[in-house]
Image 1 (cartoon, helix red, strand yellow):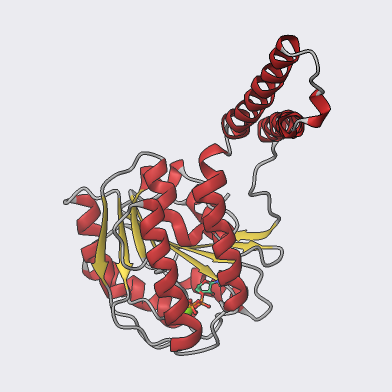
Image 2 (tube, protein in one colour):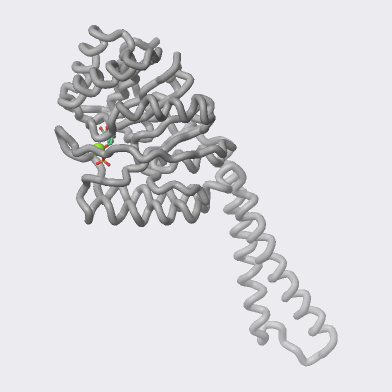
Amino acid sequence: MDISVVIPLLNEEESLPELAEWIARVMQENHFSYEILFVDDGSTDDSWQVICSLREKNPNIRGIKFQRNYGKSAALNEAFRAAQGDVVITMDADLQDSPDEIPELFRMIREDRYDLVSGWKKVRYDNTVTKNIPSKFFNAVTRKVSKIQLNDFNCGLKAYNRKVIKSIEVYGEMHRYIPVLAKWAGFKKIGEKVVEHRKRKYGVSKFGWDRFINGFLDLLSITFVGKFSKRPMHFFGVWGMIFFMIGILSALYLIITKFISSDFSITNRPVFYISLVAIIIGVQLFMAGFIGELISRNAPSRNAYLIEAKTGLD
Ligand code: UDP
Ligand code: MG
């Protein structure tokens, strides 16, 4: 199979028929073998019924329905596990991304051998204050931290070599940073393509300020904790040792000085307290590393969600 189109959605019943028809048209015109993989992320409208009836008309349509809303990252992750295409293309369900971009994205992965191509919404139709300004800030920080030169990390329209999506796990609000996860997994050829951004035709946006705050916390966790999440001891242990050594060395200094001069009270010297505090901090950090190590070794999968129904999939 050439292409899996992965579409996470939450309450998008009005857009789905038009979107499915448009994608099918593009696929037929280009003679691609394909599947459209809808993940209904706990919709409370009739999105799931719409998906099931679309499948009756087009057997290339498949669907997974979550028991409740787990978030866009979880939806993508589930679809990535199920996707069968050589090239996997994600897009939003709200008709803001154009299926007409599919052939060129596919060509960039197949022929130019990109691991990942990210859409760049150069011209946007979103509210400036709640969307454009925070997103400029996020893109600048993410660029700096990840050293990946993308203008628009958060664009829902992206294309991947299947190897990429099979080697990463997307969780939390991490869908914004998939290029970063891909780079960490060792995929270096990351490209960008300017894509058309259309106005939302039906329904309302599901992302607001609260999601940006969660996104920021996830950014911190991938840049800072992320590097050490597999080996917390490597982070805490080093600092624990440094503090512990400072404590021990200053204690030694005090003991030696005590031997040299007889009228010398150790507890009167400020160094004594520095030594005490440094040893305590050192031991604490060491224990934090130890606990982190225990947790990371026994951690359950970050993505354990309940699936209510499937169509076209085992
Ligand atoms: N979405 C989802 N789960 C959520 C929130 C959103 O699957 O918890 C889907 C949504 O239906 C859409 C895509 O993610 O297909 C992008 O969401 P939206 O259009 O609301 O975001 P915006 O374009 O405003 O950034
Ligand atoms: Mg949208």
